[in-house]
Amino acid sequence: MTRDIHDLVIAGSGVAGLSAAVYAGRGDLEPLVLEGDEPGGQLTLTTDVENYLGFPDGVGGMDLVQRGKEQAEQFGAEFQHGRIEDVVLDEQPLELSLSTDDTIYTRSLIVATGASARWVGAENEDELMGHGLSTCATCDGAFHRGDDVLVVGGGDSAMEEALFLAKFADSVTVVHRREELRASEIMASRARDHDDVQFRWNAELETIHGSQAEGVTGATLVSHPEGYPREKAKSGIDVERETVDIGGVFYAVGHTPNTRFLDDTGIERDENGYVFTEPDDAGRPTARTTVDGVFAAGDVADPRYRQAITSAGTGSMAALDAEEFLETLRSSDGSTATTTASQEQPAP
Image 1 (cartoon, rainbow, N blue to C red):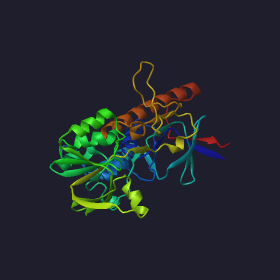
Image 2: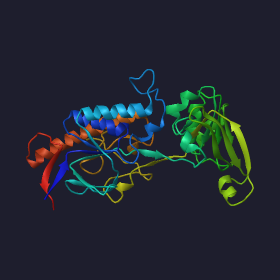
Image 3: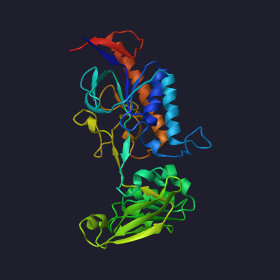
Image 4: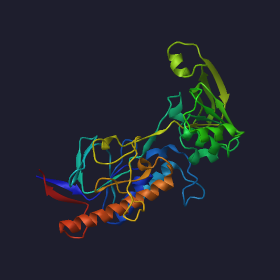
């Protein structure tokens, strides 16, 4: 009995994973790309991308992802549905157990599984995400010139989003369920001191109004003087409701990196689950993780920038680092320098 061993598996089919697939394909690694539960990642929730290099008239998020997939396939990348649920990374080949009950073996792995923005559970958010509701002010703020917008959250990210949006919007209202921010004092002060940023304390977003055709047209806020009004409403406590006219809503309540499958491995992550990547001997950045043969790219290793263009860049870095690792691995094994997508090996 034999089993196939891939040279490279890429977990994730967002911009980082697709960029890695293009570079790896051009390097004749014939990568296998695991698309995950949400092929294309967060970019598919963005209707228009205006700040991606090479598209002066903008490009749809789904269109950009589809073009990337077609480009990767032209260079020999193979795509397969499935999500990694468990891994064994302490020996070669690496072993990946998928949600489809398949087991895949590979000499190297690029983790490009992204980070999922947290939603707040407001009514109509599923319908309006990407149609006036966004989780990225840097990505979508310019579409709201002259609008009144809401930012939901109370941490540093919410303050940064509010200050960025104030460059475009007529007014920005930060909606926070308590009367005290989680943000650092310097970020909170900057937002409080800005003329175009207001605060709605002890309030939460309950409903977003609008349609995919019209975009966001309004929102219903619920409030209570002691905070956490939605929780109180569920308990039967009287709360106040107000409907406001707005043109956009931005969620800034954090992201969760999709790295749970790396629990109990040697891959080092921060307290929030983002993967650490290591510098080279000269101190320059790489896509290498703390486990040989495993690399990270995109939002899964980037809690700061979270942009399509930076994800694409780290995707290419990961592919180049993986190619170098495979060359070293083959040299140490005394095998040929020719790369093959998969080779048969007796199964244990």
